[in-house]
Image (tube, rainbow, N blue to C red; front, side, top):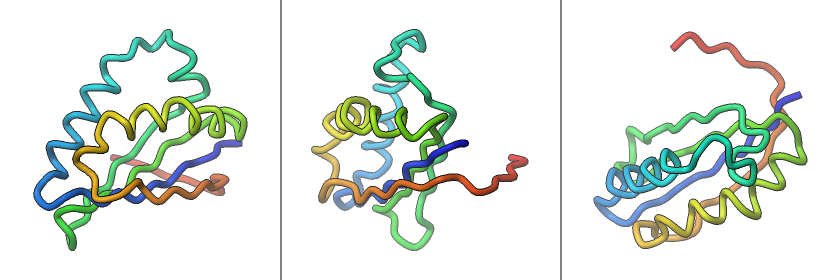
Amino acid sequence: MVFARVSSWKYKSGKREEGLKTLNEYVESIPRSQKRFWGGFRGAITLLSTDDPDAALMITLWESEDALKASRSDTFKDAVGKIERFLQAAPDVKNYKLDSAELDI
């Protein structure tokens, strides 16, 4: 079973791209062998709003509910801290259990 965290991000005006670039650079700098960060991670999708140039959704996928919960206290908290200066507010977060998926990107 796969679990997902869906987070809604609202950036300060004009700061979305800079915030996402900073976040991606931070994530890419962490070695895949670092279990505290990557333990149970299965993938991620970032969606940029076409209606609001300062909004984005991020979906991260986890191999278990325990991995999802563990990442919230470490991984997610660290990531938010790296870009909080670009955000209007902390992201709104909801957790889900994956029912089905089909991707051909």
